[in-house]
Length: 434
Image (cartoon, rainbow, N blue to C red; front, side, top):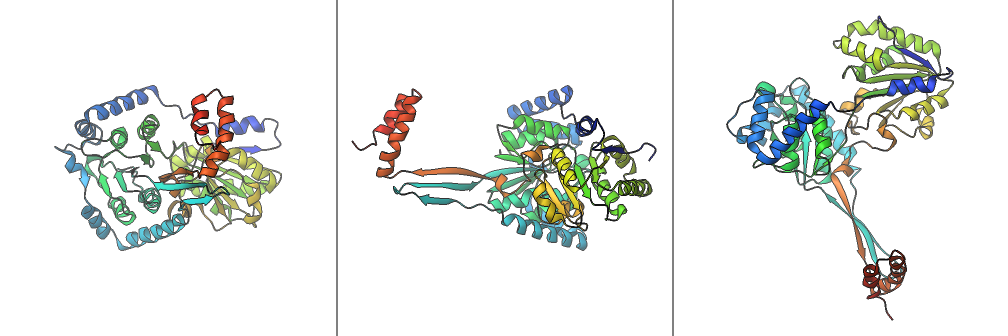
């Protein structure tokens, strides 16, 4: 590379500031984008199908006379499944099988218990009635995202799953539709952008309103999701993709370079960081980066990402590597070391942890089983991967026995009167045995 990737060492005096600068990412929404999205949301909310049709013609260059033409029936999804090459179908089916198997283990059940007074306490776990899945279309078509978003929803027991996918100029991606067929998506509309998010959030004459919207999208989609949050639930506001590799210096440098590329090729803002206690190994990986970069189809995107936001960080040992990693709280963390299990206790913040030299992050994107929808931009400090639990809600169960109402009513009475809420106190006191 003409410009070198950033090199940092934890012993340099300005390391903290340099790391903070490296991690900084401005997710503020452009004023024009905000205004445009709010206009679209308002129009769809007030004018329904008519507004959706107008925006679809304007942004996707797709002119139709009715919303019915923008809905694809299950037979069309099945046709796509049968039309794609056999190797693609088998790969999608195998990936779906692994994703489903993993997420079935996350399924939460309702529970109850009875205390000494015979009072029933518990939690009722209920799936959402309806969820919306946004899938990018056009050149950015990701059938893997369909599987990762739809399968947990179906495992959770969501009543109806509505998928929206833009088809600019009428171009349809059969692998995306095939993935929808395999995942059990209920309805598919060829809608995109903020208008699709608005249709899912508010509902139109044709598109039913959902309870939660999940799935990736461009800046207009992300802004729309942010705006409708509160009317509906959303999965997250995702930032650029990230990978952090901790290596002890004994993995093939070409492997590590390509692992870093695997995220850098997403877009220019993606972030790829390598941490190692072996300075010579950092040099070797940098040499591999320079050697392999010209062979990449997305060479310019990778180059911009690596120079602008990538880094090679030298640390004292693996313990310090874990400390730096926890400060970064990466979306994807590869532990490319001899004994990754031994490092786990030191890792507190990461969206997904890939253990061992043979565990390429790319496997997690497609077919490992765990979800590839992960917290970015340091939010792994408090957020988790998308899962079955995102499509379920929990209701507390409380059923007092007469004895329980008497005993706990006395406690509630004291607390309520201490707060000056007399009606609360008297409501509890009515059930006390005098």
